[in-house]
Image (cartoon, rainbow, N blue to C red; front, side, top):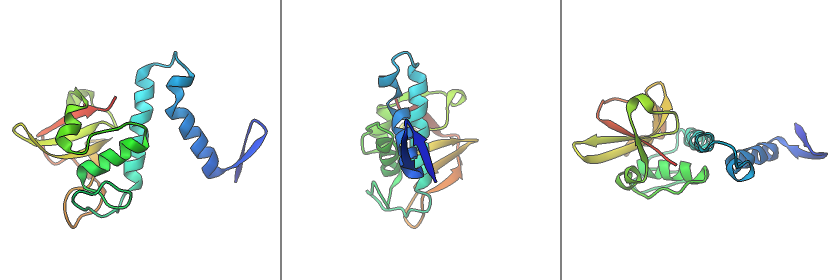
Length: 156
């Protein structure tokens, strides 16, 4: 299948890449576009990247492209969406805008904690579910949030 853009023909993957790049750079091209719309595009893209890694095996310390630990998956997904995050879940939490559970949105990060110690991170997918790489022997998957001991962070 081909798509026509300004008298040029592109394959479907090329057209998808062009449209994704345009969405990610919309803020630079259209200064009047609200920053929230730009952030939503980044979050949505990171969520799509995380979902595309479904079934990838867990490996401690891995950050892609084919193996991940929890913070490696979030790092990889947001880097693909154009945002840089630190390597660890704790450092990622400190770099996000903290939001209440009632204000969470798909693409926000979900930080699992015990007291003040963060031990896991995933990407919120909506409907109380996250994409994550949980532990040795598991694979990247969509799973229901299993505890109330979570904090949410929005990547700006």
